Image (tube, rainbow, N blue to C red; front, side):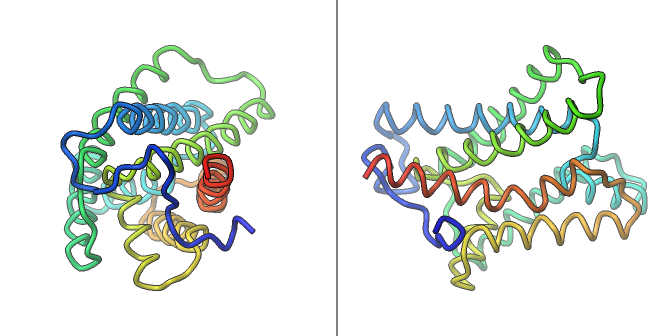
Length: 215
């Protein structure tokens, strides 16, 4: 059952080492493809205008209480999460750098090209599709094994420490982050809840399907 999956599977195009500065072309392709999907899906959630992602809610809450901009808070939080990798024994790689660049670019491009739907039903559908696409993209780029982004590294690191299923660990992180953000004054919506409760199972399902297809 995909909800019980605990490890990131390795397939033919997975890198043997996380810190690999000269990956094979297929590995680099799937890394970039997964991150493009990730950025596109996250942008759809933003465009739907029915609730920010949990991490944005937390950044907003901290911003309200600190007086810092959401952008600066997001940067600080990312640095803090990366620092936690030391205790979780996570290793960065090309994927860690590409994560920041590609996802940011896809967010800007998608938001510039796609408009918010007029009906609430279509907004809900857009947010749901966005969460699923983020899950697929996460699964693809994590299997490339070239290093996770800050938040995904927190997920995989905590999974190794707790030995709990990936879906449960990611859901716990997202729900906790959204709760802290809401407590600090951040705005949550249906899209926030969809992301918080849905992203963990979507990532796990993506890993499960890719593993079954490729192995």
